[in-house]
Amino acid sequence: MAAAAATLPFAAPVYAARLARLRRELGREGLDGVFVTPSTSFAYLTGLAIDRSERLLALVVPRTGKPV
Image (cartoon, rainbow, N blue to C red; front, side, top):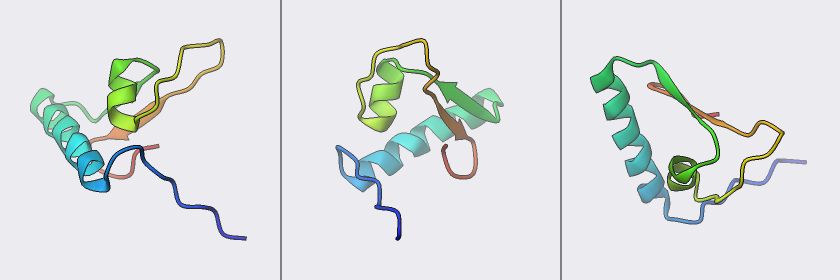
C-alpha cells in the first residue's frame, strides 16, 4: 500500500518560498542546516502549531536536500 501524500495547510508555492528564504539565510550565515523544534518558526515552516513536550519533535532543514 502506498503512503499517502503529505498535505500542507498552505499552498505548495508558499511552502517552497518559505524554504527558499530559510535556505538563503543559511547560506548567508554559512550554515549547513537548521534544527527547528516546536515554536513560531516551526509553525511558520510546517503550518503545525504544536506545544513542546518531553518527546522530541523537530524539523531538520539542510541548506540543500529534502527537509526531514
